[in-house]
Amino acid sequence: MQLGLWKNECGAIVSDWVVVGASVVGLGAAAALMLSGSTEDLAGDVQRNLTQTTVSTPDLDFQVNGPPATQLDAIEYASYVGKSDDSGGTIDNDTINGVIADKNALSDSQLQQEYATGVMIGPMQRPSALGQLKQDVVTDLLIERGYNPPWEEAPIYNTTPTSLTADDFAELWDGETALTTRAAVVAAIVEFDTLHDLNLPAALETAETKWEYIIIEALMEERGLSEPATKG
Image (cartoon, rainbow, N blue to C red; front, side):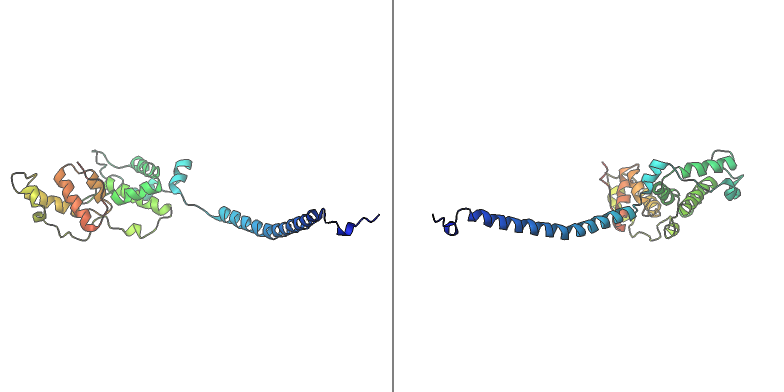
């Protein structure tokens, strides 16, 4: 009986797929070995970068941990003792320590804002003794917390005079619909023009009259400052 198995092709396709399947598995294993090392290296790099990167969030740290300890004390401000405290009394060590405690309770950004807007006075005026004490404490706290110039040398007042005049606001003081007088407009221009860029937006928000708001708005536009929504 002649079997003729060498002529019988039944099952050949199975053996072919076995070979192909084994090849695919082999290639996949090789690729996995090649990629696993790179993936581990990348994961290690990412982990190292994340652990070594420090994100500075002083205000968030302040909210979580509270105010940092300060080395300031009343002795450093002894020259203010005996001066007026704006309420008929005089400044003493308790007053100074109270100012230090109050200002140290502020976050870094609040201290910077206090520094920028704490002394809103005209160029011919001087702050009171208590006002100057508060400004000195704010400045020293900022330095203590690691803030350095140029913020320390930032001008409190605007040093570039405006080109605007009362005639630019004639609609405010001239005619039957006048909102104020020409003299008041002149005085307001002088007053608001002395404010530093950091102070003008606050003055705009607290303007008591529409015509003052218009003047401040024009000054801000002249200086290229952004404006809040128009006041009604």
